[in-house]
Image (tube, rainbow, N blue to C red; front, side):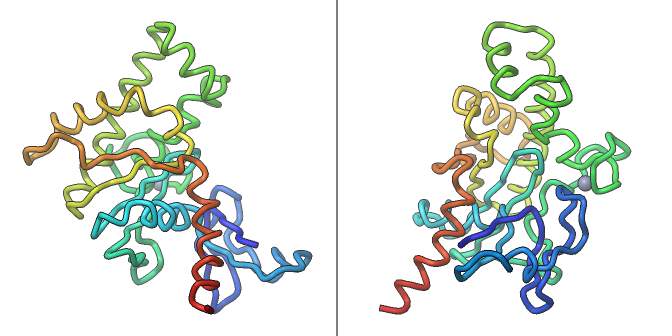
Length: 230
Ligand SMILES: [Zn+2]
């Protein structure tokens, strides 16, 4: 069984650490899996999504997967291998500061990308579902159009920063990807306007698995093991 969590698995210590979304700092992997009578694999949700998208986009040498849902995270894949960083914090794009002194983030700092681009900004903050937000947006709700325009501006800043550092394709995934099809050109246009280099913005692509990326990614772990065994 594959288990993907919004935290950082530390297999050596047998824990998942810093899972702010679950309001817990350490989760014991043994406790998490003790009642599951199958081999278990525990992975960070964004990393799992990144692996799935890499698998489906193998024409790319290097790739960033940016997952936008309540939490914002991602993965950096270099030649198909996840770059984890010294403290396994690579790909924590949600806590990149895009507005110094800006809105408070769940991490305790201010101005993080997640503080502006969590899907909570277009759902629970407004007391509605994501589906209701996009329906009203389509119907011409001017208040939501303003919120969405600000949201896209902040998202473009975050994506542009990632692109400036890594200069590779960026795959946009997570639950937001379900709704982004009609707005992808708008987001690319905003990227063109703020990029220091000439770009059409087509380095930004939509996830193929949408919010299923995480599930596919953890499943691929077992498929890969099976293929290696034959
Ligand atoms: Zn933060």
